[in-house]
Image 1: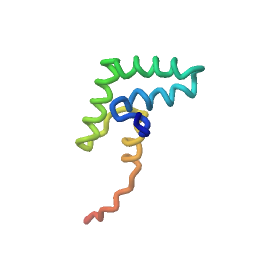
Image 2 (image 1 turned 90 degrees about the vertical axis):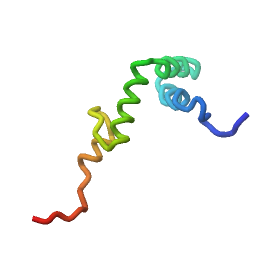
Image 3 (image 1 turned 60 degrees about the horizontal axis):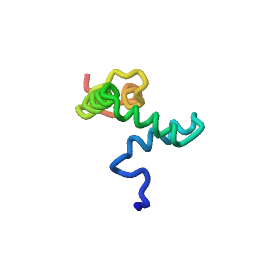
Image 4 (image 1 turned 45 degrees about the horizontal axis):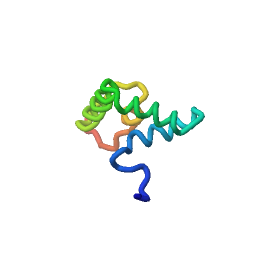
Length: 82
């Protein structure tokens, strides 16, 4: 058994279960919910869409995206010439 947690081959499900477990009674329920999320084609497609947008430096359009929010508020250090 590996000492690395979460396991690389099931990282997303484990990370989701850790967060879900804060709001449910059992780990079994948390893993069941996380498994449904990970297997959802719609959720997978949305994760891919967001990742693709960020990979090319574009905003993803998700109003809750911290990456895009921080990028809008970042102050440019580049000097401009008028």
